[in-house]
Image (cartoon, rainbow, N blue to C red; front, top):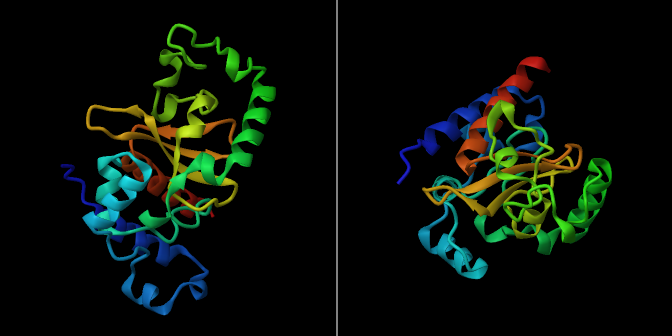
Length: 214
C-alpha cells in the first residue's frame, strides 16, 4: 500500500488555494471555514461498486485519494472538479464527439496516417513507438500520444477549460498504477504521467507556479 500522505497533501493544497483565490464567494461558507476543498472520503463498498460497474480494478493511488476525499472542488484554473467515484465514466461513453473531433484535428495537424493503418510504431503495433512514448517529465513531448488509447480512458473530472483528467488502463506499471493524462483541446496532445498521484503532484506544482505569475 502506498505511504503517500493524501490527507496532508490535500490539506496543504486547500489552504494554498483559499489563500490565493479572489473568488471565495462562490464557495460554501463551511468550505472556506474548514479550509478543505474536498469531500468526505469514499468507502471501500462505494469504490468496489464502481469497479464492478466498470468491470475493472481502479489504480491504487486513485483509490487512496478517494478514501480521503470522494472528489475535489478545484485543482487549477483549468479543471473545475474531480468527480466523485459514483460519477466517473469511460471517456468514450460521455465524450465520443470530443474524441472524434480531436482525432481528426490531431491527425490533420500531425499529418499522421489513419489509425486503421498505424505505422509510426509498427514494431510495437502502436501509433507511437515505445522509445518516444514512454517519456515522462520535462523531456516529454505532449504531441507523442497514442490516439488509440482515448477510447479506453476513464474520465475522472468534469470537462473544464476544454480539458479533463483521464486514467489510461492500457498502460500499467508494476504497482498496477494506470497512466494519467491531463488532456486538453488546446494542447497538441496530452501531458502524461505514470500515475494519478504523480499527476496530482505535478498539478499542485503547476498551481503554485501560476499563483506566483498571476
